[in-house]
Length: 606
Image 1 (tube, rainbow, N blue to C red):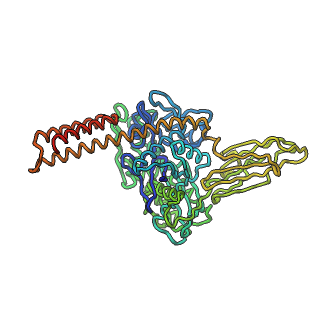
Image 2: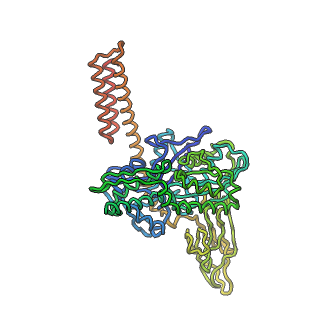
């Protein structure tokens, strides 16, 4: 059974597979190498990728993107509060968890980020199965280096709900460095730094390559900084220009905003190769067409602070790895936003004009690295990739009595890891229960970090004069899953949990409900692919027959007379028109049309 790698990006997804000693990108259903991370809901269907993106301006409230920025977060998360101001779709607070309000099949539904991502992953999975002609039950999915445990668990939930049985998570820059090291067959000891600036996140990893071993020295990142933030600056600039020159405020026009948003991404891409570009949008709103030019220098000025902010994780990663810029042998660019010339220039200046490595495709290298890791996990990996060590992304610890955070596992600790401490106690002598709060983050004050979980140990041994002591063990496996055991010292009274199942993720009932809906969706998706295959087969067959018959016109040895030829050509034209006019016809209809054409051909003696 095949295992694939999936780069589940904020703005685009890419898939790859490693087999027979080589890695290749999996094309999607329209033969493209990347798929926009967009899901759109209509009264008739759920659509994905480019098709979903195309309808964004027609139905902005039902076209969902940025689901990765929602995953594993609470409704009152500060980043979501800011995002809600610019998203055209509506978020609803359901017991502290964000739900996206969509209208699908004439009904209003409230969907969590896990379900939206599971729909996208299921679509990718179906597309990949069609491409490689094999069932897929295992995958490595990449996540930002700074994703916390709740976000990772939520991503894993989404993948499993999409029909994947075995799901491994891998940090995005780690995947990139793995693909890069194997692609260039690095055999000497080298320190590599990956700068991954994508659509929604910036991630940095420092990796040490020693012959057949790959050791992550450190990771750092920002889960809310990327190409979409650069697009947003452009959007605000264009809105200001429209207000100044036309006296029209489009900030509340969702349809116009979506058209502008799409244009901003196009403009950003153009300015990576051109010094100036033109913008023209007809009928942006009734009676208003917008036309202007913008220079690369303007784009760079409006985003300069964001480019500088993107360098902060580079400094942090080097500091944690205890390395300097001169210790780095290769700086690898990953992610579409690294194509921005100003970003490249700032990065190169930071590394004392060291050449930046652009030998790998920044849009595909993460998926390729994930595919290589997937092969390694299934014992089908490439030769030379025998040892692989990743690290924790954030520090983990417990809240102390004074409100500070006691760190048990430090950030960038090698995985797997187990740490046991026996210096935790009750607050007062005579306490019969003890509360434990688990946090993730780097602030000394626990309240400023991310609360992962909490629990209480009851029925403690009564002691009026002494504090009860506890032994606490934190364990993280290679897949980044944290297990915690807290026990009354020298007693059997203990509490054990696996973190990530309660804070910001799905309950068992929610999983079961989504799983039932996904089963129906997956069946529909399979049927749609079968329908599309029959449609394309009939269309290709009709075009091929028409071409063959038309070529026969000039052949003196042709067995057909002019009337027979014209009859077949007319039938082919009718089938081509019939197929193109009806995109949602039954499979039986396609089969019947093909049979009719075959009978006509047999009868003519072609």
